[in-house]
Length: 414
Image 1: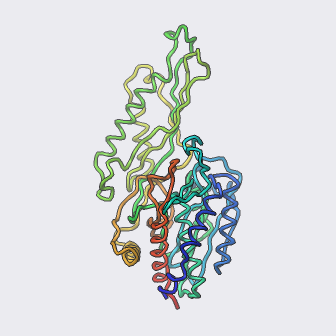
Image 2 (image 1 turned 120 degrees about the vertical axis):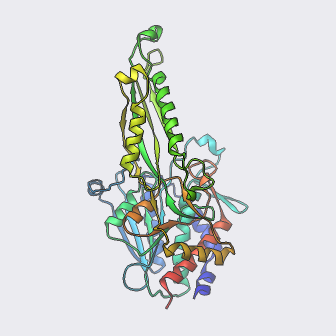
């Protein structure tokens, strides 16, 4: 049965499907994100799966406990879950997100269309190729191969396609709220051949630093909000060093698994005026097993403790908008790790390393929902969110074959 499913995998078809998927500019919150969900629903239906596609009730989800937050403007969203096989809860769910981040500065793409899905040798380039449409397509290819091979599964296999992962995890949150579950899940985020069993978290913060306006010609009468922001930034860097002083073994080779970064800064409204407000937004890394409330408190304390006379009298305001990713991890000793490692070793001849990731993901929502979950997927996360985004097709095919073995073994062919 395993051989039949592996033989049914069509590498050329998988690459074509990846290229078609990358060409849909499914930036978080756009209409194209919903368009891709409906495309995938048709493909999964053609693969003989029972498909549940539904429009998200955004207001209801925002009112629920544990709502993960969003950052991109959104007027709609769709959930998509497909199931095939026997009775009961799925023995395995393969999960991937359809949304991608914006392209950034078009000039950085060196005249190339970010959504052209160009292929050079063994590499496919384009926004979303790595994060994470290659993993999304690997999941689809497994379902299609099982159907094409005529293999009937004794226990259900599920494919979860979610929206809004990049700005908080609304799609995964909605999928779990709808009652979809599984005995175990693999999220096919890019892992460079490793198996990621834990994620740090990431909390979006907003800082407002007040100054005092004055004419630029008499700047000594004012207080420049940019200037008084510098000691705040220095305090953030000190906090970052402190929080990364004791790196867990799972993060071996990563000297900074819990970075704190300022992503945007806006100040002033007139070139010849002293700016009276600076607004900075960024992300705070959450340590493994750390309560996000404790991470927020540490950040707020560090910002409030800056020794500067103006800031003592006018403390910066800290708020927490946008995505709020807690950390998460596969339960220690869970058999899913060995099952995935065994399938990978049978395909590649190499036992994959276990590791942890310094970024937030849907893993924490699935594990918090009682679904043991890990990451294993094609691509190198260093290419994600960058104008050089790409994925090696060799890795795409290896991951797809390993996932096919895992699915047949966990769901047991009849």
